[in-house]
Image: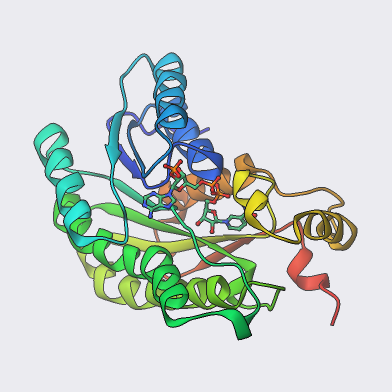
Length: 253
Ligand SMILES: NC(=O)c1ccc[n+]([C@@H]2O[C@H](COP(=O)([O-])OP(=O)(O)OC[C@H]3O[C@@H](n4cnc5c(N)ncnc54)[C@H](OP(=O)(O)O)[C@@H]3O)[C@@H](O)[C@H]2O)c1
């Protein structure tokens, strides 16, 4: 469906879950792929092998913390040396402290904000000059940006900041030939969910309340990213594309 031959895609958190689904689709469409991760080397190596098997090309593997300027500088140095330019930046890596708000400290808040919101600012700063007047930036957000969920105060706030940043970046970069957008998903059953104290309830409730009567899968989110990187959306700027099977329309009041 998409022909991204000759394109170069950098996906943060591209070694597991939704990020890996995005990287896989990018590679299938012919793009060169760079995968970032932070800690899980085994998953990273498996992701590299998977992408290589699909495309016949070795993806770049970039270890680094997207919340740290020095790590971002290091990763972009490699991208500049190996690729010269990039076409797509997918800011997907995320983390965050899942607790009721009365238990959240300044440190929890800052940690979550830095990884989930500041990272897009820092990554874009480095990516835009490498896009040379033609590129796409897509951030991965969640319904917690606009809706309240148990234990999600810090992460939801960081995703709200992320979506606002998408709108501000889009205004700055549109005239430079760069589209900045977001995809926002409801619950997706990845490893991230094992960190939620209320995982089972979240999955059950999502299934009950989603009009489409099935959970969103990593590939559904990846399809949204592919659309936002394609020529079909060349006039789409600053948009948050919701991928939730209709859940946000039907959430209980
Ligand atoms: N799962 C859901 O229900 C859901 C719903 C809506 C939106 N989302 C969003 O979708 C995105 C991906 O979520 P997921 O569920 O696929 O997550 P996941 O399975 O936990 O994977 C997270 C990925 O991000 C990397 N990562 C984490 N912190 C990092 C950091 N500080 N610097 C660099 N890389 C880092 C991880 O690397 P390591 O393997 O090295 O740890 C891993 O590759 C996130 O933005 C998340 O908020 C998820």
